[in-house]
Length: 617
Image (cartoon, rainbow, N blue to C red; front, side, top):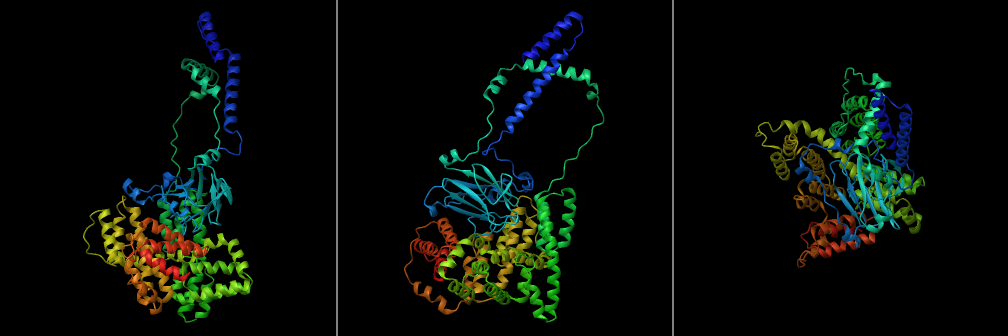
């Protein structure tokens, strides 16, 4: 600054002496060197190395939250957000940290981490459920190690990133950002002692520099600016020449509606339209990760579609052996798998599963056999044939070896535990949408004009409870035209389509398979109506159950009513925890089921469910 003042004085002196200002070139040279040195010093401070640096921003592959906001108003957003999941009743101690979803339709949803291990993903059996198609069934887990927490990827398709870096396992600091698929989740430490130790150090601005800035006079900066501007104009006057203004178009950005449109095409098996839209969008954003992932999926499913159509033709020509050989090679991940089940039947698919497990055992692939067994039992825990294979495998290997393998494959088992059920639940709506879309939307020709989005939505729920599923879907189509309820209406529409498909299948099925379908229907109904049809759904299972299996509840029915001692939320949380522990820790699962039975009366839906599952352990 002293140089700047000297330069001003020099100009004043020259002006007084000659009547015309001149520029001290030596002064300008020194001034330029000073500015260059100051800039280098600031850049060096910003790039200061260190292990505990400020976390970098999330990767560019994730869609910015501003682009993922749908058009719902504040009221609807509030309805979609989920409150903090309180697991302190299970853990016995206060939370030390929590996870918060930062974007997408689950924005604001959070969970307090009160246990040593929390699993996150799209599957309903996770501790923290993230409802987004880009998130894997079992995506990542958070676990405590001594005085801190770690994040581990569970073999997810899109991988897991922390602060922009792809990870297998990494220590977590306060306010780290975890990216799963297209969703961003912030990790926050609540425990103050832990936060003090596991907070990243931010670059501190030099106090001397701050003091200098405060003492700097605004007039001095104005003088410096005028001097520099005059010097630049004298030596480079062409800079100040104006030309025609160039209009720069804003870059095209991918929105959530674009992805929803493509996903809708894929779900309805309209792969040609999906491929066309992907080609169009990739011309505008060739490196967009989510578009590339969907392009890869469409290309894979187009090959599957060729095999599926070939096998379907053979099956219709009564060449069942040749058809089944092709069908068996199609993965359960495929969008065509539900159609295969529809063609060959549940019993044939169950037979394939048994053959696959026996083949794995004979080939010495016991770990893969265990994984397959766990996946099937998570979908149908009362499958006696699979249980027998599990018992024979344990007998062959020995209990100790079996337990050792179970622990080694635990993460793999957890990722596959609900694979069959959850994948079929996700795929069911695709076939239902294809079959019901045309008749369902043209049937109600004489309906009254729409009274508004929320009114149509309420009418759809009433029609659903009356089992008029097609009319409910049609009402939700009308409700979706109102942006204030569009997101909610589309979500419930998919749930009703899945419910309708499984409801029709349950009516034609019996035995343990029907019990599995009933459990799915209960889950769908909770999402649609909050559980208003649960008793009616469970009656389906009672109608087809053999008398001996209902004998035990019949003997306990006359017992006096038990006074409930647990809240509904506590019972639900405890029940979901017990279900997730059935294979991992049967003894703890039994204890939790017994707590539910002791703390609820017989009218509570979880009371009977807990008794039924307790008997199966």
